[in-house]
Image (tube, rainbow, N blue to C red; front, side, top):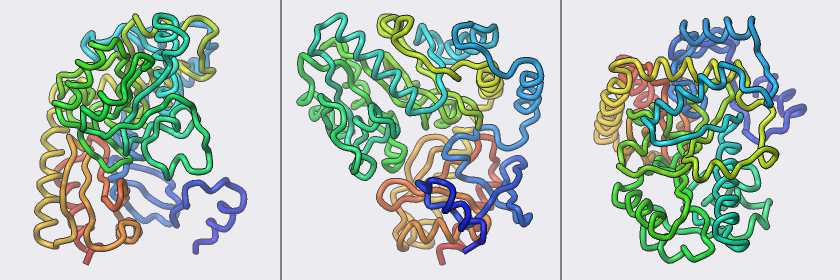
Length: 395
């Protein structure tokens, strides 16, 4: 065991099972550890680092802003916060009306749940606070978000959680219909389940949820913390499903590594979050909003998202071919550069360790799946390099 792990495990609350490596710097789509070893990054901070390391536009924008004003007062709508909100709304092509900035994905989910509950209680009555969520989902680790997590591994040890939360089967519309009642305030789902295994929703399922929510006057929440910000080849995954949510939670790629998150929503829901009813000390600070604007500027450049689609298809095809040749992978799935495959060659944890040793940063998800969520700026040569390392590591 590297010596630094002894100290880390002693003084840090180890909820991550720290890896035996310390990264010192990054360049493009590569990381370098403290010994100078080079790693191809196909984890991107868990689908966070959309633009890679040292992106010149991103770096300069943050450098300029930190020299000017790095922190603001949450009671002041600084110009960069207003501009970032305008850019974010424009990126959704008019589907939403208002933005609330916060700092983390779980906080964005909490904001969506609070907006839906307050709207429902104030318009439908004091008992209308229930929520239906999907089995296999992951929405964060705070108590509200944890209450709608569909994986017991994250809930164990923290129950009882919030009451009135009902689990239904992902991609099974009738299961959701059966759980809805007059006291349902919201339905929350991920268009693509991330931690649950990179499992895309079917169009019929999401479109059915949209119709159900319209018919029963229920808020439809999409958690796009992992699937948003160009990750799937469209700015937001819902755009590929013709099923628009009322509220959408964003984070991860929104700041491409800078901690920032957001709730976007229709005004009829967000207007119920009135002064004093919600807040976030760091939410919408000038540095965070500069990161948002910089990321959106790059994602909206002509051809950027098409490249994500093309490279995502190439990644899935390459992984499928590798699976056929080695027999180590099956059920390749995903959208854009949000890709997974079931690992049939043993314990996925052993493969992740072998990949790291051989210079590839990758992740796991679901029951025993390899998750590949690289920076969105990768090229085909990087995918070929990753496949070579995976072959060498799975033999």
